[in-house]
Length: 144
Image (cartoon, rainbow, N blue to C red; front, side):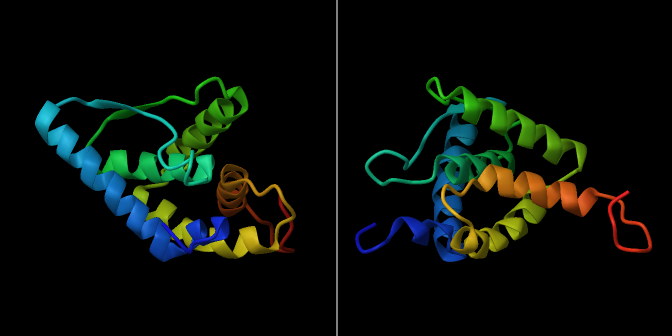
């Protein structure tokens, strides 16, 4: 979108807009094709310079909300991204993180990416967020 900077994509209004577009497209395809798996990739990451990790999370949420049981996300040879996506997805499933909770976690991303030293990793941030949230704490406030 003209006039937006790459940092603007982390604003919740931009995330909500992207989520709406992804959900609309995926829901229409699901209703038309009646498939349980969707194949996708780096939407909005080329000329629009979108954050691949953020866009993957948005598509994961949109696919889940659209009723898909599985998503085949093509990273086009980006093995570190593929590994990170698999690790984070497994963590989300094990911690029973639902779309609503994940969406709420993304509200923190805008602020985090503004204070982090580049390069910022949405997936690393979410991974640490969930691990910290799920980590038992003793009475002194230290991790066990």
